[in-house]
Image 1 (cartoon, rainbow, N blue to C red):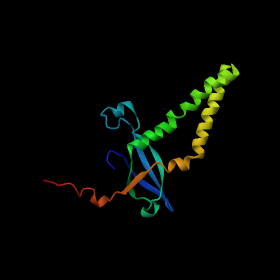
Image 2: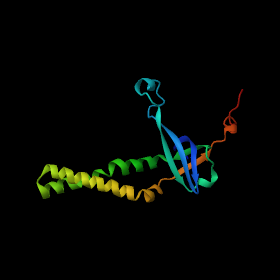
Image 3: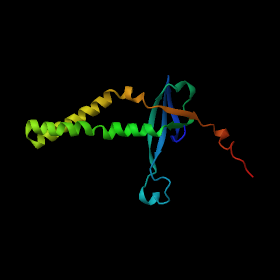
Image 4: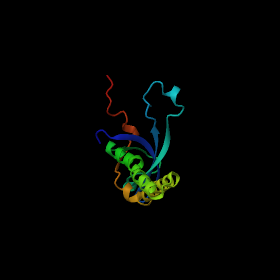
Length: 149
């Protein structure tokens, strides 16, 4: 994919059509020369569960996982921007009804918790809208495209 976000990973499990890939998520400033002075670690490991491709891969195989950058913005919106809506809507309504700031804040937090509960309940349906592209990395052909002069 052109302009996609790519990570190399290792297949940790294959269960039917579901592929589990462990990737190391690099820090945003991993290309910076001063990154070792700023941050002690380069990234953290994450596991992706990708449906529909499990039969093409085996455990221990190296793969490259790609995702379109717009998908990251979609995830950002669902996780951080959209939750502001129930909070910002419920806070003034709750204050108008109760007249108590503490109760209004508590009701807004309950609205936020309810939003994340709905997100958790519908995670599989939402997860199907995120499309990953998985490619095998053939170690024997890593240097195949390079020409030595």
